[in-house]
Length: 85
Image 1 (cartoon, helix red, strand yellow):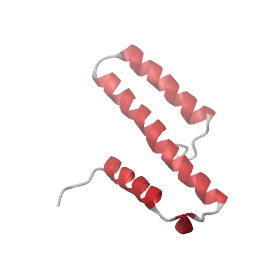
Image 2 (tube, one colour):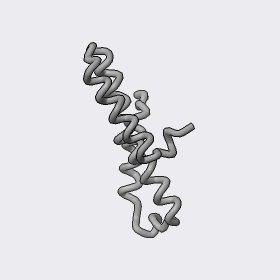
Image 3 (cartoon, helix red, strand yellow):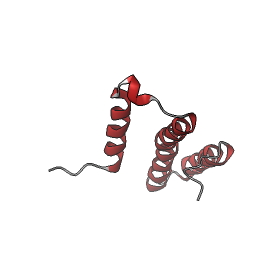
Image 4 (cartoon, helix red, strand yellow):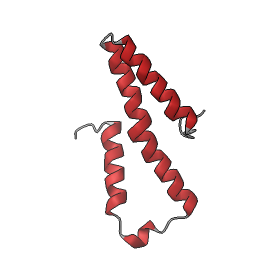
């Protein structure tokens, strides 16, 4: 069996949610909000973290600093509850 990365697992879970029948999508508002936050977190916050790491690896300190500022803006201004510990 091939090992599936965490990112691939997230994509599979999201695809599964999209393919569910409308009857199974009858969720409460709080459950929907939490699912949206998780999707937001994965696609925005995690992508920014990867960009910061790559920028640092490529010695692009200026770009890394810009990405860190963007991360702060997304992480604190919008108060991503998944990032907060």
